[in-house]
Image (cartoon, rainbow, N blue to C red; front, side, top):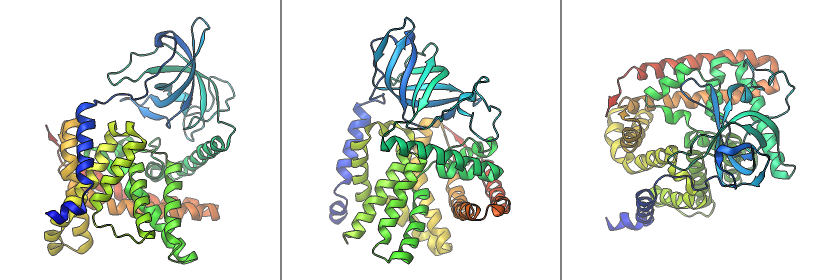
Length: 425
């Protein structure tokens, strides 16, 4: 017991910090929108997009984006500097002008020259603002876009390059149909082309974490970069390639609480490996990552993906060895290990899901162990086919068909597990 406490000396401070923050500081917007005007009088909003637009609502007829305010104009023509963060509701056609396969190819008959993505500096004409939510967010409803561009500095150019890369990648994935829609969701977090039936099935099967960008996706890129670096420049240089691949993936996909957690875990593991310092306890590393994470992005702690990400990994690290031992004696090595990890993750996340969603998915334990390996193979194939398609464009249709076969296999498995009834709380 004493040795366990010594190896996990950061676990208690991290747990105490979590209790204090969640117990005494309720969820709220830590950077509320501020200006000289009342929100209902504002008609123009100048802002910098802090996230990529995401479809919202049961009918999926609008997009929502987080924006850091720069200035605002009222209906009388007055102008004021502004600060803090707001959420802006965007019309469907405003966000889908450049997206392949969508109905909107022009914005109200006008030629458009803008690309809405994270980092863009925009001016929106807004209608009446909705009332601030219980957590302090301010909402604006965009009627039209006045301007949209990226900063002329180096970081702004990187942001624009990222937006263009994501757009061209979406166009390639659109050519691969439903399989491309799933691969787009797995690699960028965008679910614009993911079938509604598949998206709902992942949720009902308790597999939403597979679609959420996290450590599984980051480790796939890291392992590929490590192997390439080791083969090309030797074992000592391989960790640098792994770390660079992780950073590039997070930059391309966009920072989310779960993905940033995975990046920190990967970075700490690589640094310890380079310094030849043995990590006596993975839970201790996770506790350190938790403290560093909330020190950098304290607002992330109020995101459900943050709670689920840390809870799932803590469950795997805490219970995996205990659960896996009896399973390994009865099942093949890989199957027993995968099922043990799934049990550990679900043990911590089920109570959280019950609290927020009012239901639990016991079938998710087996579903995760069965579907996760298929998804890993799907991602590896997708990455190989993307490279092949760029080198030999004529091979793209054949790659899409092969990927479509694996997509059908994954979809069938997910639909099967989605048919298992949920437990309502």
